[in-house]
Structures are given as structure tokens and as C-alpha cells.
Length: 166
Image: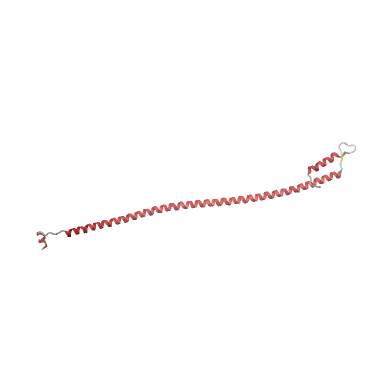
């Protein structure tokens, strides 16, 4: 027999019972053809067995699908965690690099300020030395100029000078 719906077999069984006749001298007991009823019951068993097999296959497939989905979900979660950790590490590296850059920038500013201050001090010392040198040079020029003027003045001899010279 071809695979048929179980409810059809149950319907056949009901029809067989309704179509059967009552036993002699009884209005409640019917005589049923045992062979037909047993065939219908066998058909019901076969149909139930087929349905049960199909249900077991469907449940196995469902379990495989669920397991595959759970495995895939676990992999997605692992990847998401790895990605999140990588992003956190990148963020941490970025923060460290940013802090390092700020620190280097601040150190550079301080070094530049120190170098500028030392350069100004050095320049001031050089200017002080130049000023001292030029003052000494001007003083020396003035002394030499005065000597030159004194030597170039005509000397007039007076009696007093003559007497002293002798």
C-alpha cells in the first residue's frame, strides 16, 4: 500500500465498524470482520512507523542544524572577541603612542626653551665681552690719541724750563 495519512486508516476502521452488523440477539455487540480490521491496524502501524521514521530523521536534521548553528555562533562570538581584543589593543597602542607623542612634544618644548635660554645667555656673554673689548679699545685709542696730541704740541721753552733742563 502507498503511504497514506493515518487519519484515513482510522476513518476506514470507523467505517468498517459502522458497516458491520449486530450480533444475534444483541443491540450493542457487533460482528466485525477480523481480517479487515487487522489489515487496517497493520496499515496504521506501518504508517505510524513511517511517520515515526520521518520524525526521527527530521529531529536528527534539526539537531544537526542546531549544532551547526551553535558551532557557527560560537565561532562568530570567538571572532568577535578576537576582533574586540585586537581593537582594544589597537586603542591601547594608540593611547600609548598619543601619550608618548605628547611626552616627546613636551620634552621638545622644554629642551627648546632651555636651548633658547642658554643661547641668550651665551649671546649676552659674547656681547658683554665685545662691549668690554670695545671699551678697552676706545680707552686705548683715547690714551694713544692724547699721547699723539701731547707730542704734536709745540714746546715753548721758558726760562724755567731751560734752567731745569740744565
